Length: 183
Length: 183
Length: 183
Image (tube, one colour):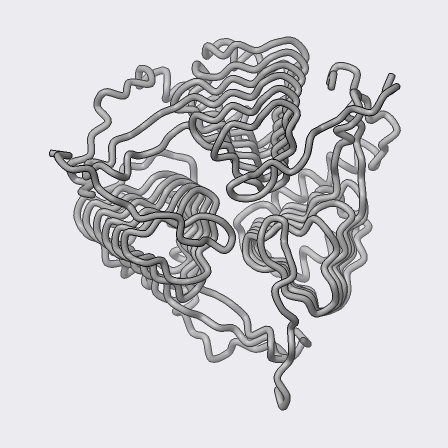
């Protein structure tokens, strides 16, 4: 590969003014350790084009690349120090938990090409899924409804609905079964 | 799971004033990159209720959730950017090394319950144990005396005394044997 | 192990004034989130003794322990939040990609010794190699020419040229083969 020949000119994530404005808001309200209430952060996200459902919780230290490529449904939680590295759409469903230190990744490179071309693929977290602390979700991966990616694991492929996955690469371990009578 | 029904009202980690005060001290003296001497940091930790032995070393960038749930014995080291995420007691023994970027975790959720109840379990590092750089220790885990969790590994179960463990989940690789005549 | 007997007095990475000066520059220009242009960062690195080739790209949030132990060849990229923990030489070749959140490690301890002696070993990334996002390279490891360490993996041993490795410890998965006619 010859990185001097690399170009991602085709990739236009947004105007410079929008990106720079977001960087300022991100530093003050998102990446900082200050415990701003979630409703302030959600207003800012919406202002920058995110689709955000009701009752979303966003903890401090969260890093979102481009909020206009971010969607999150009702009641979902984005934990402390989560890194949403969304060069393209990252869509988090309803009632999802993205635990502290998790990393969601959308950018890859074509390592078979001498030009190391940028490849971007969306990430989808379906409803009621849980990405564990320090876990990583790779580009193009869908975390199925109710699926769990356990602590520190790396999802390189889709996780089936209600599956519990572990390891790097994360493999299926068992099914998630709800207890009866959980109120 | 329905996160709008989630409640952790039973969990009372401390008064708001104590938690806010700690956040200020943590930002200035612990999470910052400034190389404050360990004795200052230890005095602050004790002021907030930590039990700290003699000659403990605490590097910059360390993040401790609630110092009143933190114990560390004589001569132990807490490395750069270590994250002590102690919703309940994390107890580090004597002569332990917690290397840079390690993450000690005490909070979990009951994924079999529709309510996703918070579960907290203490973490114990017994004397002379070593948690390697970027490694993760899960809730409820005890790292046995002299055991080693290698770089980037994830301890999901107890590590036996003097065992060396690796991977995610970390599995036993070999025993730690001290050389004779090491003075 | 008895950490009160630990000494690394033999280890002299540089004068205190040099180390402190670097800490200031590092905070302002490297570890900060501010998008300083790469040429400013490269000038600073050279001022502190790094060997830096042409057209190197250094993203924000990069943490370099001691720049005088750092070499990087033409066209290489150092991604966001990369941690170059170089107690001794870390040498990155030409046309290399060190992706965001990667961690390059040079320090270890002799766990068979009661004194827990510091062990430092250089890390080498040969030309056209790629260390994936959130991946870790252990002390003494050489990443062979064109080799790839995949996302979140931990290289504990040398990677062969053009090999693709994954897991913790990272194991060989397949060979990297360039497509024909990639211009």
